Image (cartoon, rainbow, N blue to C red; front, side, top):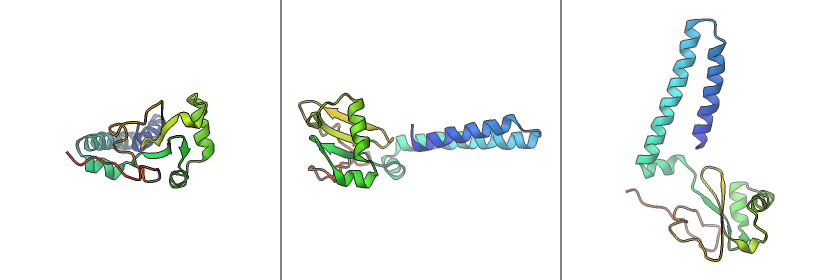
Length: 146
């Protein structure tokens, strides 16, 4: 779910509540028209995101690496306004017992935090679109428009 999807969900709920309490047909038509407009916009944005990589990059944040090889990347935390306690909380929730178990932690464009652990570093395919500019990889990986 993107941020826009979340906003549309909240707005639709609010408009439905308003539509349920209206006393005139005009107000009902206005509320239903607003809901239809939001849903059409949501569908058009989803289709555009899927068809155009350039459009997707325009409306979404890139995933950002927050940890690499057991080290917290303080520059990335500052840029994303994620605290160290948020990181530690997520690690405990993922049953990570030691920072050295973490190969990479990524703040995804959806706002979720992904943790990659294990013996090996994640492959370039997995890390393809991740902004690694605060870590030892010091690069920003992005696919070209197909």
